[in-house]
Image 1 (cartoon, one colour):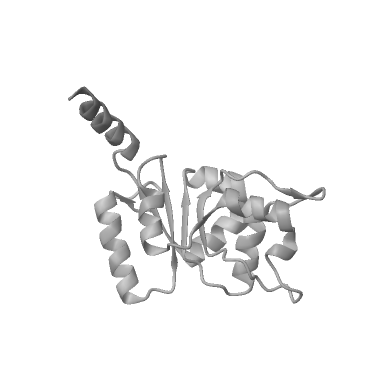
Image 2: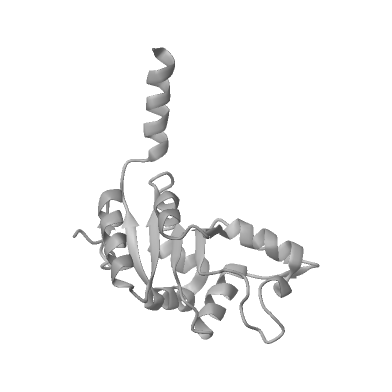
Amino acid sequence: MKKNDIGIPIVTRKELNLILDRIASKGAAKGILIMGKPGTGKTTIAKQYCPDMVSSNQLATHYMLKGIEGFVNAQGQLMYPTHAIDDLGTEVLPSHYGNRLDLITYLIQTAYEQSRAFKMYTTNLNYAELVDRYGDRVVDRLKEKCYFFILEDTTFRTITQAEQINEDLQ
């Protein structure tokens, strides 16, 4: 298996599906973080294994509407599903009645501290950008709780556009 300069496996969609099937069949305790360029199929693959995945912007919107009380109970335990987040790094920094919060950082740290399961995460960010966005501490916790993969494949959107053009011209 090909790896990048810091040891993260670089895979195609086919390879990633085979790996994820094997991980699922073994009942691995670690989650998955898929990095890659837009359109490569990260979300499509992730939703096959974790259909309850929500986008980072959906979480930000939920915070803006409900505040932190929309995520944790009176004892500080996470209630909202935060174990499967799509598009890390694209979220706005939400505000609820003027209270700004780096919500994704908060949710990942809280899930880690409460020993919650980490299931599935996707991002268009590369490793260095992930560290710049969330910091060494959060990324280190993600590395502990997740297998990292870089998905490198042909973009679905280019394929779809080419197919649409062919279909329209016939």
